[in-house]
Length: 299
Image 1 (tube, one colour):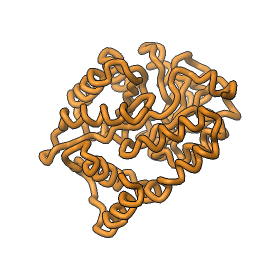
Image 2 (tube, rainbow, N blue to C red):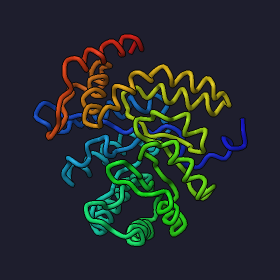
Image 3 (spheres, one colour):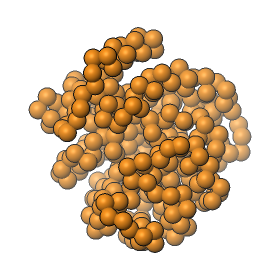
């Protein structure tokens, strides 16, 4: 085992993001949410997340709280729980963050406010103010819909002891990872995202984990085990098995909601594939492509 693997931080490995199970009336199915949580834990995941992939932006504040409370209760300390608390206002993001901490989240994840053009120094201040008041680990999320440059992320990392984690999702994520580690070295702890499409390439560049979807989490956890065993070629070969599936899922975030939920339904994890409006359902050809990929993977 390499020295790098021996010295992994508290948050490392595979943290699938939970796709929120909604019933046909678009209400959250909390029983299925518990089943989904168990499914992810059983895959060998190191943690899990409630975030953009959970359609958190379509939830009321009371729903957010009950979802987190349900997941934390089901997890019962077995893995880490990361809650997305990003918002367009500092006070609102702070309120979300304090509530998440109160309900048992182990860490937070926040995208920067992007509706209005904001100077970089104000973005840094936004993260630092929340970090210093909440005082639990924070993932700075850089996503294509809310990008934040590696240089600004490193400024935040150096300005507060709590926001040391960076989730790189603005493509190309491999270059983003390289730049973060070049600028921040060991000060910054990098996770990948974007369905984990570049998981192994990101690990090669210094990341310590990924936050993929949760439809096939066992492929990521097995690859992570190979990586920790110093078997990178086996890790890469294992991830290549789902490359065609990831190619289909990553056509758009909205498409992935429908297709990942369809996979979870077929695996007996959730009852409904409903996605809250507004949404656009994939066409029949896409579902036929999914049929073939599911059959080829034997899931």
